[in-house]
Image 1 (tube, rainbow, N blue to C red):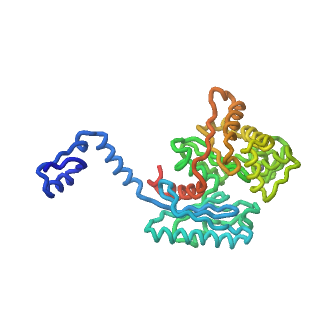
Image 2 (cartoon, rainbow, N blue to C red):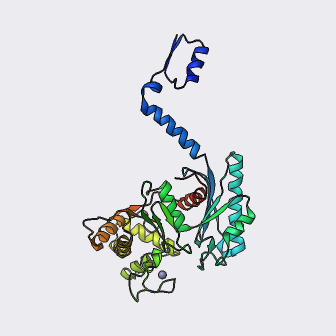
Image 3 (cartoon, rainbow, N blue to C red):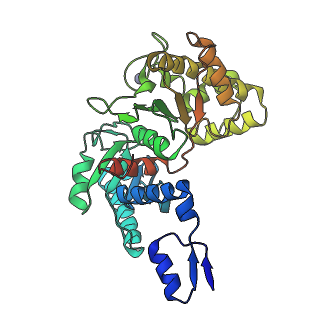
Amino acid sequence: MVAEGHIGTPDEARRALNTGAWCVVVGSAITRPGTITASFIRAIETAASPEANAIGLDIGGTSIKAAIVTRRGEVLAPITVPTQASGGRDVIARSLLEATRQTLATANARGLSLTGIGIAIDAANGTVFAATENLPGWAGFDLRAFMARETPLPVSVENDAHAAALSELYYGAARGLTNFVALTIGTGIGGGLILNGRLQRGRHGFAGTIGHHVIRMHGRPCNCGRRGCLEAYVSTAALLHEYRTRAPEAALEGDAPAQARHIATLSLAGDPKARAAYTTLAHTLAEGLANVFNILDPEAIIVSGGLIEGQPTFLDELQSKTQSLLHFGRKRPPVILRAAAGHFAGVQGAAASVFLSCRGILP
Ligand SMILES: [Zn+2]
């Protein structure tokens, strides 16, 4: 009896002889350098990057998302708990601890070891700056210190827009890119800069605040206190404004997100006023993106957010308008991509932040 196939090591050859083979044929393991090299690469990768998991948490105004995230970005056992923001800081903190506790229990039950806990929130350097009504009582709260007291694992806190950029870099549309800008568009505009493959946080954690660069001198008032910022023209509120200006007779019901969803549906159905509102937003956003392309000359700008989801023509309008505004635009067509990381991008990015704080887990 001749043993042939799947014998790749001297040990496997010996075992085949010991179990009764008369002789052993060793093929690819000797004759194919490609196969041999691949086995070395696999061994090196496993040694350099042990299996690692982290808990990722994403704190939003209405819900807290939590999950176990593997080094490769797989999202395991995701849960969503209400933020209960109206209850104030202590109630929100309890919701956060509850989401953490549930996810820790799941990791224990599955026998998964954890590298740490990452949290994505509207924060800079671990301290919450948000003075918005979304998270009442949180301004100035040292979230990292609070969580470090309450949990046994290392904690990292990442600005939510920065976390979204990390998620695109490692798990989304920017894999393979080293210079790009990620923008999340919703109630405002959040931005994350990746330069030379590294997230740029800036001195105080505010790098990438592209929503607050002025595109209209003496323009509309902005939450930051200035006038004419990009996010005063491109946001959920701006969409409602553009639509109402064109259709003052239209009856819109519900809160602002519900009204925006209604306009999105109208636009998809071909309603000319809703379409025009979106076109105005795309053309105004292009003013901001052309500035970013001029300043940084990135490989791409990646856009995401509820406002533009499901609007198939938005990206084309944005791309062509940006190109028309760009210095030498015809010779360097700007690359604008839709984000690939989905609903749990913040959770993945928060986990990536944990992995980056340990050597050898992420490249
Ligand atoms: Zn502003």
